Image 1: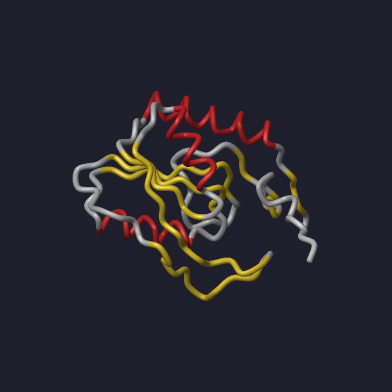
Image 2: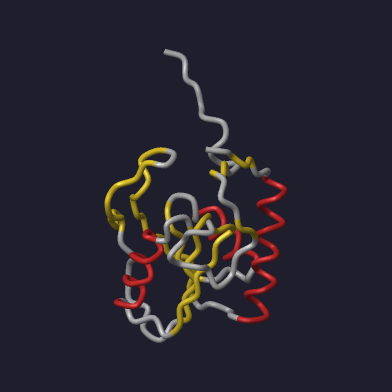
Length: 154
């Protein structure tokens, strides 16, 4: 599978672009960062938008490039209810959309008044087209936080 490598500068520009759109069209009360890939964008958006409340959900789906479980599983749930809240669900990419489907259902179950999905990117085949995204690609995306694995000496 072809890959596209993104730099920290590109990610930062993309996050600021998303923040500008959110300010104009949907200021959330709560940001839900989808672990792991959505955490850095979620934290940055929270800071840029004025320290908006940030919560985390951990969903496991992908095992390796192009390999995933049959169904995403929530491993760390969202804490507390979201009754009456405007919620932005933030992830790095909407690929199959299955992870986001699970998170959207959970956020609805917790009583959110309004939900928007915010991603840096999306794949053309996704079942969940984000309400806000920066680019679309059919390539495997390598984000800067994934690029350099640490090596340890024993």
